[in-house]
Image (cartoon, rainbow, N blue to C red; front, side):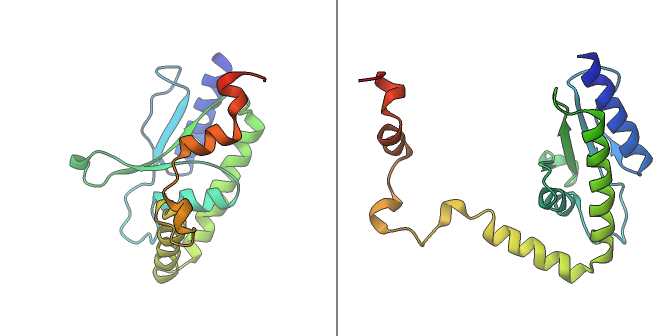
Length: 157
């Protein structure tokens, strides 16, 4: 557990050096995770969700969240430090965050808006698919599970 704490603290310190605001506790207080957000700037064209998408393009799953309703749309990103998240991987993540920020800073507001619209239309519409055959559109997942995985339910025959 101390290795996870050291890695989380290293990531937290590195992100703080890049100018991010760290929202999680350090030194083993709480879970081994790093919650952070961008510093408030009026002239920045991107937000935490755009940064999370750019990291996803580079192979990282760093979710972005909007906090509770009374927090004035406060957004944050979160990295959970697991056993396989070594210092080398942490350095790779930090390098990819830097590259993603550089890419987003080069994009203008319209390009980022088009990208966000595309993501919203194509990546969050999984339940609104209209291209499926009408017969299979309402099929329950339980029936599919039973069809493909009957051995898990009843054992070998």
